[in-house]
Length: 342
Image (cartoon, rainbow, N blue to C red; front, side, top):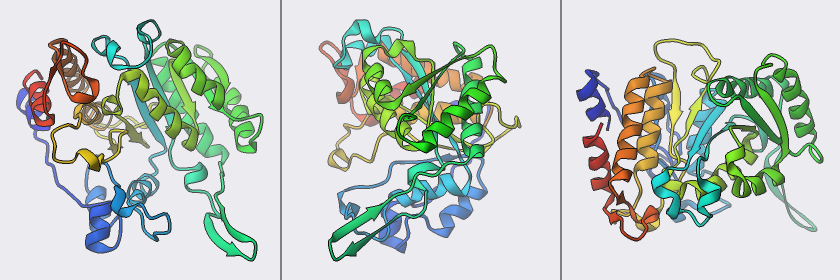
């Protein structure tokens, strides 16, 4: 895809590869080797493939594939994870939800990415005379909350000017702090409306009335779960891209290039590896986000997104988004079809 974009628009993209996750554990005993970190530091952006698989799923394992993605997010302070959820009209029938619920859905979840349960301390397991115990800690600072909320408000200004802040303020102290800071931050954005919603209500409304959402801003764990749920709206997890941003986040420093990490939200799907069944669209749309946010190439990003829509218009599908009357094609051919239309 990058070769096609470069050919059409006169750019050259230098692409280098590094092993992380399960492959790196097998080879180096480390999910995020120093060589991968060093290469990342020299790069303008990271395009990340999925990690994990049954081979490394032992919950007692000292090193896990997910350590790679968590380590990259934390090392580069990529605090804002943007996850667009767009329902393509061509894929209305790919979702189990009714067409009337799905029409016109176009929202973005801004997930806080470097704090909360995934990084809080203490985080450990141990055994006692009464059995096994485990603890995870949810910790958030004012700075962490305020900067991701700012990114959400800035993004909303470019869209329909509506922010829904999702928390669990009826139970959690971190959520009460989150809500207070959301109210304070909103005063700097009088043109953007702010709505508070408990996470359990948000989970219900995402499948009951998803058109009502514009920009959702929420903490790490809630954002992870809600965006996987939102894949039902788009028809498949194979349709959802994401961008993990620091300086490149909306409202961040504007430069010619800004570092970010880009990944589809789906996993590695080892059960269909090598069968040509995987949907490449989430990765292709992730490339479009990389072009837009890290390389500031808006026209090029739009060309990729339009190419995806054109291929769907023509009835091409991978198996996960197929419906009667569509043409099911393998992974590589889907990628080639989209690239030809850029």
